Length: 266
Ligand code: COA
Image (cartoon, rainbow, N blue to C red; front, top):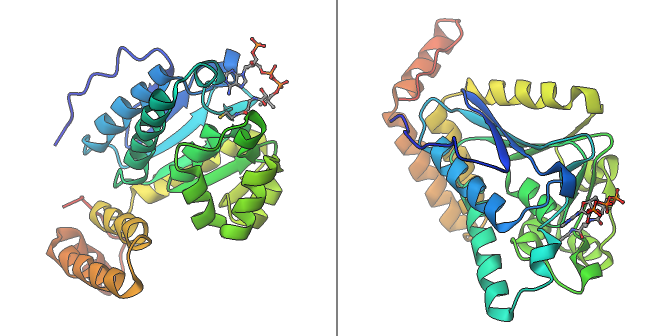
């Protein structure tokens, strides 16, 4: 199914649409902070790319040299009421859940500060590549607040409870190398190579069998919220379902015929 979603009216995101699509958060004057409008544009964009069968992988990055995303927009946070705060968090969680469960690999190319909502956005992505100059952290505690885009949950699942609590309670920024050591990012590369590395990895993942890719993402993400034995049944069901695809026949046949498979997404 090809999507007719119109992304021409976006003000805070730059979109490069293709088999590997690139979303650039583009508010460099505020270090790409996420205000309500930007989050809504992200929601619309993710839905459009999800439903576009021509899109096989996505890279998310920030405009400029300095920042991936420096958090939720503090101008909005400063004036919110309790009820609005709750809605704000639920809406943000929804957008990040859409990214996590898009069914296509989403790679965060972390080109600088990934703080607060920026770190939460990166954690919702399937994989994270950081430039050597990146800094990551959850500094909400220093504002007298707590993360609201599921940062307390994703960070603990990614790096473990003890390390998550240290980052969340100190609010300290960590370097890219430290984030790598913690398991918060998958790779660290020189700043000049970041986008190349992210695009190359995205292209590699884009060449894999799309249904199997979707099922792996589902099995891991959904499975983490199940008991082990429930998750095993879920995995077995997806393992069986993937046998209905042409790509399974192509992949296994290509191996036996000693050639490269050509996956079609069916
Ligand atoms: N929301 C709104 N505006 C932000 C912002 C945010 N999360 N992060 C940065 N900005 C704005 C700054 O207010 C500043 O605006 P100004 O030029 O009008 O003064 C501009 O972006 C540049 O930031 P500045 O603080 O001057 O840059 P710096 O290099 O000295 O520091 C950071 C960079 C990232 C360390 C610092 O901006 C920062 O701590 N930002 C907030 C991070 C945060 O707490 N995020 C979690 C929010 S939940």
